[in-house]
Length: 310
Image (cartoon, rainbow, N blue to C red; front, side, top):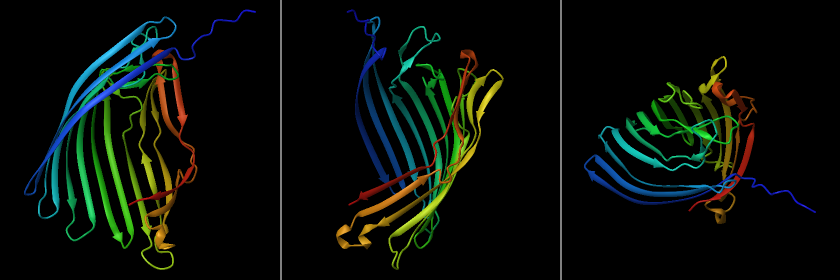
């Protein structure tokens, strides 16, 4: 009896290692807070192509740093600014010639400039935060539909604005609102980065009963809005993922109200996409590869948990 040759199910095998050293210092001088950090990463990887036995090795190191400053004014305003660089090794296969040959993904290197304002309204439990940012990143991985590899963009930059508000509106009632707007541009294509959205918004409220027979019981919910996102170029032009809004709900109970021996224990449950809305969450279109894919988002998802804190 003869047996057919066995073929490895996974064509590529990769092994990677990363080590980092990190240092940080913080200085307080009156209302001024200065923060600085420095990090060095060493990364190496080894990839083997099972069919041919060929292997590729990658070895790199990078120093990254971060510097920030914040000033607290007496009337509750705190402007800040920060600048940081980043180094991120990436797993996965990349092809530069339509899948004829594969290679390991290069690490992604980036830098970010951010500035903003934090404002604690005097005499109130209301915190407002507004910030603008500019991010540049190289070697961003972009999926190619159902193909078993990605491509790496030369350079991507993102500009955006964020606003958040946190308020203890009434005894036990917390409200949080957030809005973000961004524009992500892929310099290698001259178009938005595939799977990048234009922004999102959210509004959530949670109420915990402070007294009475239901003391310690909390419930809440809110809405998440996601703006349209770029899905690539199809045969008939640009493909965009439609915007959508989802609702979530949650409950929580402090079990110490049942017995002092349960101090620190809480039980909670949450439901995402409360009304089980059907929506498209992602699209990837590649006219040059003759492919286009769209995917539905997560259906209603309920989870429960018991936690302990000390």
